[in-house]
Image 1 (cartoon, rainbow, N blue to C red):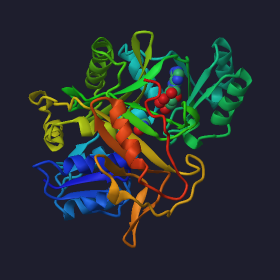
Image 2: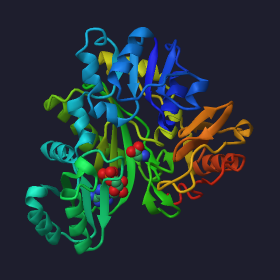
Image 3: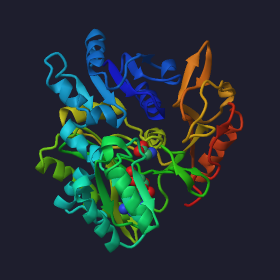
Length: 423
Ligand code: AMP
Ligand code: GLY
C-alpha cells in the first residue's frame, strides 16, 4: 500500500516510524512532515488543510490510505471530502467524518453527546453573547474554581480555570463579547470543577467495533510540579500506574462502550482514534474532553508499546473488521520527554542547530518542531523533539530518556526534569 500521513509533529513522526515497520507499506509520504519523517518517508510540502493539493498528490502517487494526525483537517471535513469525490472515495481515511469530529470541534456538542448517552462528565451550561447575564448568574451559583471553555478549536488554549468570581465574569465577557479566542469563544461552556488526577484512554474504532490501546498520562504545564502555562504536552508515560483493572473496567463500561454505541445511535460515522481525556474523581472516571485524533506526545509512548502491525489495524478500521484482530501490547513501560525551545509556550526563537543526535543510545528520538537545513537539523517550532525510552518500570525508562537528553543540545533548550513526579 501507499500511505500518506498528514501532519508535522512528534505524533506524525511516530506514526511514520510505526507504519514504516509494516509489511504492508510500500511508499510512505508525510505532508508536510519534519526532519525526522524525511529520514524514513518522503516529505511533501502540502498544508494539512489544503484538500485540493492533497487530492492531487493522492491521485498522482496512487495513495491507498490517508492517516490524519491533527484535528484541524478532520473538523474541516477531510474524510467527507474524500467520500464525496469519485477519484478518492476508495481511499481509506483514518479519522472521523466531519459530523463526528464535532466531538472535538465543539465542547457544547461533546457535552450534549455525553449527557444524551449517560456518559459521566462535569455538570455544565453553555452561554453566548445574548445571555451573558445568565452566564454571570450561573457562575454565582458555582463554587470556585470556575472552568470556562471556549466552544470551538482554540489550539489548546481555550480553557480557563479561575479562582476569583469577578475574574471569571470578566473572562466570560472577554470570551463572549470581545472574542478573546476569536469565533471559537462566541459560545462558552461553563463547567463544574472536577478535582482528581487525569489520564487518557485511546480507542481505535471502525464505527462498529473498538479496541482499547494503552493508557497514557501527559504533562501539560511548562513548569516542574505542574506549574505555569499550559503547553501542547511536555512529556508522557504509559501505562498509567494508578489505572488498575477495576478502574479500566469502569472506563470501558461507563465511557468507551457508550461512546461507540452513542456514535452509532446518533449516526456519527467514525473510523479512527478517539482520545478520551479522563479524570479520576474518588474511584470513578469522568470525561474531561474528547479529541478525535491521537495525542501528542501520548502517541510517542502509546504506539511504541503496540506490537500489532499498525497498517493491518488501519485496514481493519477501513473494512469494519476490527473485531477479527487482537491488540498486543508490550509489557514494558514507555516514557517520553519533550525538548522545547526556550520561551515556549510564549515567544521563542527558531533555527537553532540541534547537536548530539548521533550519540543517542537505547532511546528513540521523535522529531517535532525540527527541520533539515543545509544538512543540519535545526529547530522550527516550540516543541522540538520527544525522547522516548522503554523500561521495566517507568522510572527505568525515564532514566534512559534523561541520560540521552544530556547528550543533546540546542541554544535555549528547555525540558521538564520531573516527568512522572506525581505517580
Ligand atoms: P480540555 O481542553 O477540555 O482538556 O481542558 C484543558 C485542561 O483543563 C484539562 O486537561 C484539565 O486539566 C482542565 N480541566 C478541564 N475541564 C475541567 C474540569 N471540569 N474540572 C477540572 N479541570 C478541568
Ligand atoms: N497532549 C494533549 C493533546 O494532544 O491534546
